[in-house]
Length: 279
Image 1 (cartoon, rainbow, N blue to C red):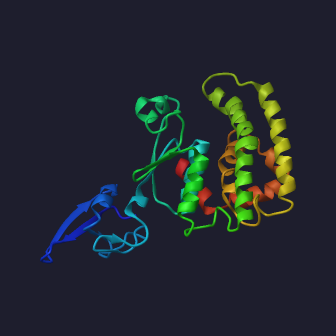
Image 2: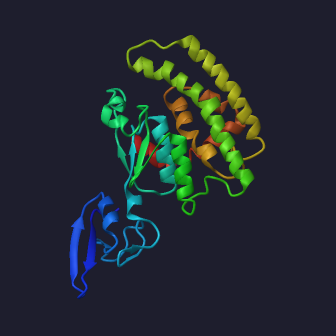
Image 3: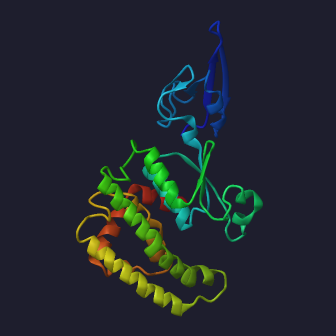
């Protein structure tokens, strides 16, 4: 991404007015009625692939504001990772704004103006604000349907299956995964003892959930069919934490179809980019 953009405005007599600005470029959106946006690096009217041609202030294609999607949340947390993954899959430029959960910054009055429940993530896209990670990934998968992989499905039936498995992840997988992480990783890091009995029960219950996945994945390559979608993407952060931090990789490797599915989805470039981001 180029560091500077130049905005050029022409007077009625054809005289040029030129200004140069650094990121973020959000303020240019309001002024673009009479501005042409140019890239300093290439001296053309484009922006490193992120801006389409702009002629006399009429932006053709993507708006400038798409370059400054702000994601609030820690990069290591599963829910913000879900959003970052979707943006990476869709090649949407974003700015990550760290929120220190351990210091309670998510409960600060300023943050509560963005997310009244004091949770992460939140995204700000120009004047649009959205919270709840699964709502966010649905939004960007639809907004950028013409870019990157189709994450929603093409037919009504495909979309319904994607929604079904996103809901399964939210209601059958996620809570068990979070409880395991809380008892085995988060509480010990805080100097507190986790409930090993509860963790064992969650491990058993999660195994039963993954048995359902094992059967489903004997019928299709991915959860919603034969293409990677949000149904698969939404599982990546949780399983990644289970394997790398909770040391529960056996829940995956003991199930051949689940393991093959995990190997496919965890080899995607977007997942590798995210892992590099959080290191």
